[in-house]
Image 1 (cartoon, rainbow over the protein chains, first blue to last red):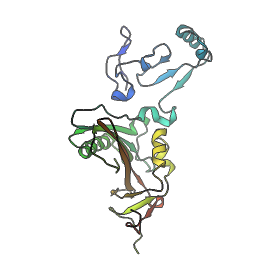
Image 2 (cartoon, each protein chain N blue to C red; image 1 turned 60 degrees about the vertical axis):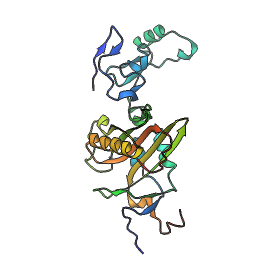
Image 3 (cartoon, chains in turn yellow, red; image 1 turned 90 degrees about the vertical axis):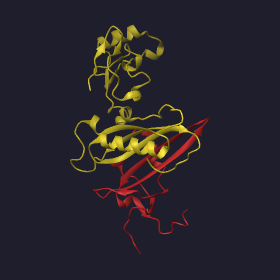
Image 4 (cartoon, rainbow over the protein chains, first blue to last red; image 1 turned 30 degrees about the vertical axis):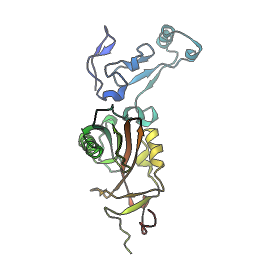
Length: 171
Length: 89
């Protein structure tokens, strides 16, 4: 999904569709590093390879290097760790007295014709908040699988809540 | 003796197929590989015949608890039916 970028503020106008999974700021640009990374869609980073970066060159120098085509690597989410950047889920923030869960459902690509062609649609996220972990987890899982719109092969959950409730089963 | 796995059975995860893991984050791949050799209860058999089970854990840090878990579907070849559920705890 394309996001509108405001060059005056260096920030996107809309929030990151991935919520807080895209980083601490949902409105940030390229990990708050607009010189070192170019993010044409708001979802992918262009990483500039700089052999001398670690040796102390400035960000401006690095930018010039990139313009003269010294080296440029386009790294999409799926080039990096087989899509792991986009798919990562993190523990939700603590909500007083409640359980918060985040889930991700992954499309079963072992079933012919099941998954959409667009790699970004091969997984989906969902969230849930409830007084107990089981309910929050089930809501998050249900939302993730509903958003997926194909048969899942896997659901991952991460939850945060008050101590005292142990569970060792699946998502 | 019954060999067909059904919902509610205890099974041992004996392996994981590549198609299940290949596009998951590396950290989750490692977590799921750690489940191999462990037992779980079958929660569902989906419309395509995949047998669903899950593993997870809850840890407590200060006054906050974190749960992390996975549920997934695999074919029967990656599971062993627990014929002695009492013995295997």
